[in-house]
Image 1 (cartoon, helix red, strand yellow):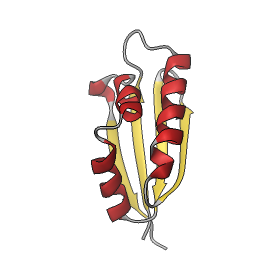
Image 2 (image 1 turned 45 degrees about the vertical axis):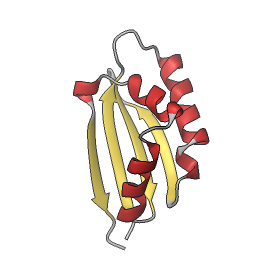
Image 3 (image 1 turned 90 degrees about the horizontal axis):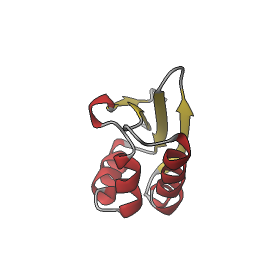
Length: 97
């Protein structure tokens, strides 16, 4: 059973779109795509100031392991610092197929 992980947020004050997109790309290419079970990841901007990062993991264990492995990664820390912490919401959904 795969896991769809959805993170929504607003950018932190003073963080521009270009800065965020650079941090997002680096986290994705340098760290996240190297994680076991990472199948697909995409970033999108909604109306107004809301952003979405959607990640597809091979299993719940893969998603959990990535959370642990990425905590100390500089590229991921930089990406997280671009987000307004109170606005961050993470949800996981288990696929039915």
